[in-house]
Length: 208
Image (cartoon, rainbow, N blue to C red; front, side, top):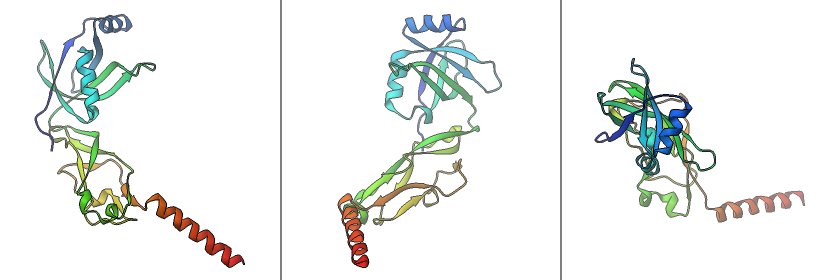
């Protein structure tokens, strides 16, 4: 489960519009907005380097932050969108949504696979295909899981792991109602090719 909520320090942005946003970027900041929580939207600036470091660390949109803005009470937020420069792929604007601890929110939670050594299918040379490396779950803002776990123990080639096979954290629920696939174990490429050759050979024999 999620541990201590990390701080995210920002400054209140004076002025709105494209001019203020450009000025913020020239000053090494990324403009953003904080909305929701029955309060007025709050324009903010976040230091570019600090934001980029967070983005490179991964799971940015799946992380609950404690937003600290001077002159305002700390508030829990989650990122809803990061706009990037189409050429440089660097952040140019970020949107955050205020949350209460009891707020339910849809987030993409990473999938972690464990016990590879106890998986017969992998020992036989099988290939683990992560169909969904992340799963969108409805979770409570005060209890966001770091990841969900897939135990590979006992799985053989041809086996499939679906969402119903996973023990989800308390209070978490998939946003998709059907029992969708998370991962599967396929045969090694050499074995698949050999099987295809045998099938072709059998077919030729029947025609003869």
